[in-house]
Structures are given as structure tokens and as C-alpha cells.
Image 1 (cartoon, protein in one colour):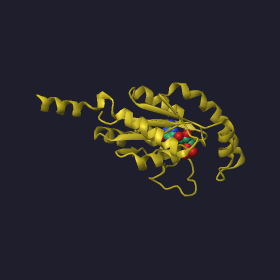
Image 2 (cartoon, helix red, strand yellow):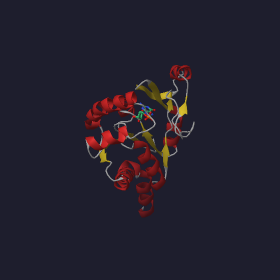
Image 3 (cartoon, helix red, strand yellow):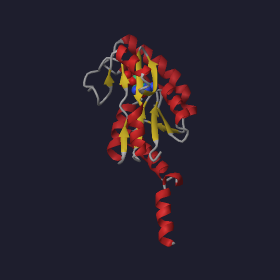
Image 4 (cartoon, protein in one colour):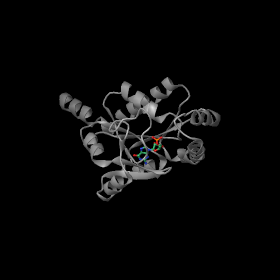
Amino acid sequence: MKGNIFVISGPSGVGKTTLVKKVKKVVPGLWISVSATTRPKRKGERHGIDYYFLSEEEFRKKIEEGYFLEYAKVFHWYYGTPKEPIYEQLEQGVDVILEIDVQGGEKLMEIFPHGVFIFILPPSWKALEERIKGRKTEGKEVIKMRLERAREELRYVERYTHVVVNNHLDTAIRDISYIIKADRLRKERMKETIRRLNVHTG
Ligand code: 5GP
């Protein structure tokens, strides 16, 4: 594969979605994978841009068809990564960034052993709690569930290749862009440049 995958995981409320969108703006040659989900659409979300919003029946059908690279149940809903577009992008030398949960992250670690797996940490537990509680779009039950799950998810940090603390947004964006840049400079990804130079020096 000519491109690589960059997986962004971390507890709910840590700011993954914002980070991914901002990183896309500053790093050229990056493609954001759009997941499918059975979760109801939140205010402001758009079908095909934030997610492909599917019914449970549609989602199950796609599972059977082998449409997903990975899928997982998070809270009450299914989330899945469409397979084909990822391989298309990678084959064209485009790097793919995916915001997925820790279950999905683990599956992709098996499929892409050379992938880059970035875990986003909050500056403190208290900060995370405040962010989750401040999400006005969700009810009390959902908030409680997200807090519990956040604790569970934090345990997975050890399995990831990189850790970024989202304290100051700009710093976190820069950190992720450095990680991507460093991966692009790995000699395995510089083969074409090396080959060209060898030819010229003959
Ligand atoms: P939310 O409902 O807040 O958009 O996402 C809930 C969780 O599902 C987040 O941790 C998000 O990273 C995860 N998620 C989103 N898309 C996918 C996916 O395609 N696969 C997996 N495994 N998790 C996903």
C-alpha cells in the first residue's frame, strides 16, 4: 500500500472529531474515512459527510455483504468503516485518517500492522467529565453511560503507537500533523525518492 492509515481513538468527549477535521485542513493528502452508523443524527450532522446514517436493517445487510472493514457496537448503536474507499485511497498514495473506537482500533491493528494508532487523552479526568456533561445534545442517561465507557476506553491507551494530550487544541493539531509527517518520512515510504536519486547519481 502506498498510503498509510492513521487511527484516532480516545474517550468520548475528548475532542476527536474536531481534531480530525482541523488536522485535515493543515495536512495535505489526507482523506477522512466516513463511517456508517445506526445512531440517530445529531443536530448539524449531515448524511455522507459526518456519517452514513443507516437503519439497523440496512446496517446488518451491509455486514452480510462484507461491506465493512470493521464494525462494532458502541453504546446502543452500530458503527462501521466502509472497506472499499479505504483501499482505493491507500492504493492512490493517499493517507487515510479514521476516528473509531478502541474495538475498531484493535481490529485495524491486526489488518494494518504498520498503521499509526493515535490515542487522544484529556488533560485531566475532571476536564473530560466537564466536557461530557457540557454536551447539551444528550440526556442524563447517555451522559452517565459515556462517562462509564470513557473510563473503560482509557485502559486501551497502552495498545496504541502514539499518545496526544488534547489540552490546547492548536498544540494537539500540531502534534498529530508531526506524527503524520514523521510517518511519511519513513524510508519505506521514501522508496521512490531514493530510487530516483540513485538513478541520477548512477
Ligand atoms: P459518536 O456517536 O459520538 O459520533 O461516536 C461514538 C463512538 O463511535 C466514538 O468513539 C467514535 O470514535 C466511534 N466510531 C465512529 N465511527 C466508527 C467506526 O466506523 N467504527 C468503530 N469501531 N467505531 C466508530
